[in-house]
Image (cartoon, rainbow, N blue to C red; front, side, top):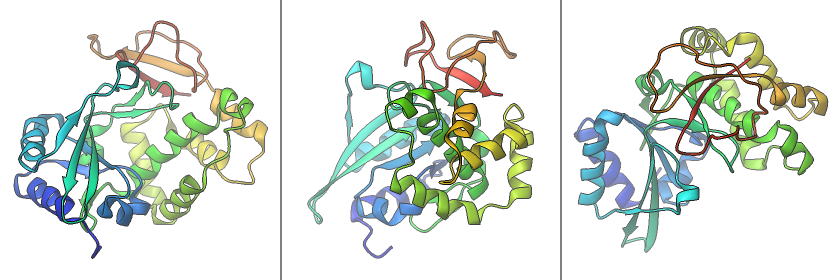
Length: 258
């Protein structure tokens, strides 16, 4: 990645030198664009390292951007920096939780941040997750965004070209034995059978009805963010792309798709 911006190189070097646990958690098929500052940097960071990340960003001249309340996501902060040599702004999304869902809601959390980060390895400029973890999260993200009734009705159910390229980039890199082991250990409520159906529904030859059956499925509501408890607290049926009543971006759902 010879075209990496100086500011981005300095950021990644500082994160490594100061032992910040992080990875560039999505769109690794386009890391060259991220390194050039053409894409946002989506960094998943250990919450314990949030103070060190903030100090590094401030030291490098980044400024936090406060989004309007309706666009704010729990556990996600946005920063802008300026690379003078390239005359280009760099946008960093610091994620402390894996928040997924439809673009208008983003109210589903996958509570696997720790093992996801533990899987990360050097990938050039950035640390990147193991392909099995990234592919699992990518598939669930895409199903939540593009395989729901509302997405189909609004004619937004087709994967965009960038997502199609990402699918084609990640799938051959996956060790399926390891992937199923990850599901069994960290996402047993998804499981191999449902995950295989989700992968199938992202293929271009998948019938619409099959995609709708996966996208509309039942969801099991786990504990909401900020509330105590270890087990499941309620069972509800929701369409994955819709926001359930009385749930906003201030209260996330830990959702099990079954």
